Amino acid sequence: MSRTPSPDRRYPRLGVQWVVVLAGGHVSNESLPVTSQLLDETLVRLAEGIRIQQNLPGARLLVSGGCISSPRGMRLCGI
Image (cartoon, rainbow, N blue to C red; front, side, top):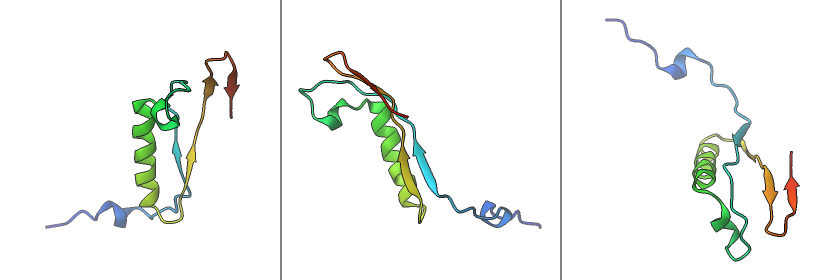
């Protein structure tokens, strides 16, 4: 009986350098703490990105951003 090799043996392990977390949105409200302004999607993505990054030695976490609209009508956008 032939056994199929595990994926770790079939494919070379590549050195992952970055774990990228895409923004999921937020609500601008100066009466809330910053962490309470993040939408659930953002918190879940960030937690999973941190979990993955901690299991990949040497990998760095890169978090994307989007446009921020403040209650004062200011709009800030990042790359």
